[in-house]
Image 1 (tube, protein in one colour):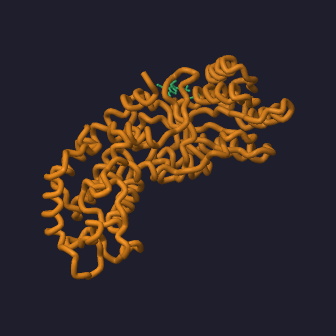
Image 2 (cartoon, protein in one colour; image 1 turned 120 degrees about the vertical axis):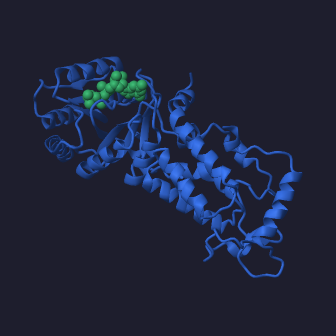
Image 3 (spheres, helix red, strand yellow; image 1 turned 90 degrees about the vertical axis):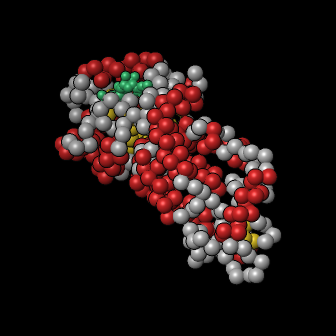
Length: 383
Ligand SMILES: Nc1nc2c(ncn2[C@@H]2O[C@H](COP(=O)(O)OP(=O)(O)OP(=O)(O)O)[C@@H](O)[C@H]2O)c(=O)[nH]1
Ligand SMILES: [Mg+2]
């Protein structure tokens, strides 16, 4: 099974929920009225995308609907996938881009931190980097052994101390050893902890502070989040970010029964780029994050070309053209019933020129045009 298929299977539940909401949404007709925007926002929230991201996606689409004079709900939904992709935070290339770096992996218990450190060590070592691991999870002897096994698999050195040692001291020693060995990628595993545990969060703050103080190369703190977590994941991420000022996210278990929307909720709200994803338990099951594949798996399996292939005369085109006089955002909000058409483009405009037609006239004309056209598939019709 390909990674995309695994992710698509994992996100089946989210997609089903989204599909149901969309069917209800489209069942109410193509009008871009207030109810449409409210229902669209609700559909996004229900797929775990989070309140902040859903609101911003809908606000951006509303703005585009006005600026591009989109005629109906179908034209708006043609832009939805691109808009969701755009809601993921960008950046983070400097972390795994090849420059020397220390990366601390943090998160609640069992999200996949240790496994991810192992996979990344393997990937980076294979790419020719000089990697060293540090086991700052000193709570359990088994955790140290677990990372030792990964170090062996990836064939990279590891720094450990006995169970119960101060995790900050392990970070300190790991960096000393990295400097002595000329390592350029230092990956440090930390113990899982609940974001609600004040003592453990304070301990982690100390780990990060000591590491930053000791290291001559940049230190990044990466939250490892389990994609099967629901809305609680957002609260976890907020708390870790508040305590540690996170730099990026790694989303694991995208092959599982993922509620994948949560990674968008976190990435968007906390402005954290997703620098890798975990798609299985094996050493090679680590991938770069691809927002386009992710959104396809999340909202429906459709081909991007379907959107691009829209004939230019179709008012539902994925790339609607601006009317010349509508280049600047206008005061009109695109939800009003009397949108007008650019005569030369067959599109809506906002000026008062005599050739313009009313919304009702436009709908009549558009219906007639659609009836005369061969049937065209949109992505939601393939669900
Ligand atoms: N299916 C799947 N399982 C994963 C993935 N990443 C990790 N796991 C599994 O999740 C479980 C927990 O992984 P660990 O790496 O031990 O998690 P951790 O965050 O280090 O856990 P603590 O140290 O206890 O906080 C293990 O059974 C892993 O094999 C993934 O991408 N997909
Ligand atoms: Mg661990």
